Image 1 (cartoon, helix red, strand yellow):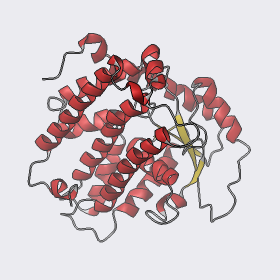
Image 2: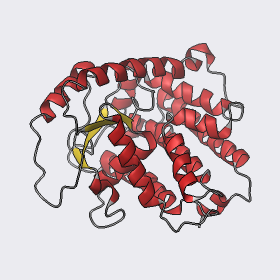
Image 3: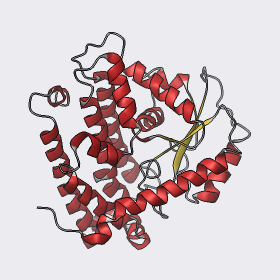
Image 4: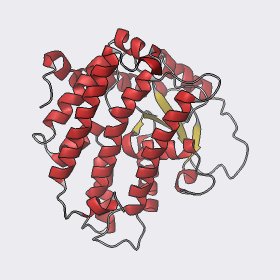
Length: 323
């Protein structure tokens, strides 16, 4: 039986949603005057999931039409204006040198999936575009690109009874890549990244994102190609927690949401977030960390429970995630 987290924790999802929506509205209004018409500025992460707080940074990238075609990655003259405009509204920028605050080209997002050119940054942008991407400018381009990616994953010859296995396999690859990257980023290099907060996010928000994708792919069974794509478009339009509730039901997912709300409540508090960011691996017995880690184990059990209750033992997703 999960512990009772009290009214403050239970308000955390609603409070984060209100804060995130206000910021998204402000970003859309401001960027409309800065980004060119052909550019689609996409945000991922806590803002797109409607889980942000004043302590959250913002992840975003820019989609342009066409392909790079192996040419130099030229910086567009308006990129600095986009970055400055975002920073005025959300002062915490993405980590430098990562997958974000970059330009991606629409055609390149559907080519070389799994090939030598499919770097960690490219799979990150592609999968987050699908699973949690939210437009800041040019909503229609985001929808067109997302549709093109789904059409690439779900080929014309797929059978009605089949799951979208190409997408499922890439989703599993991306989730495992996140976990491997976590070890690399927090252990290696001249300046390893903060460990504690990344660990807790891996247990909660990264895992919920993966589960929402896994459950969505399960919903592609016994539909023709067009209905598979349309169903995924519908599901990927929803914030992650809403997607879980929509698929699994309000009552069935109640304890999962309570556990997740506890996580959101804790990391929205600046003093807790700061303490987790500063926590070294050697202090994994810290009371604050253990509270969240133990709740993370409960959260994982709740995900497993709703998965098993929603998709019975005969559902093709059961076999697909194992073999």
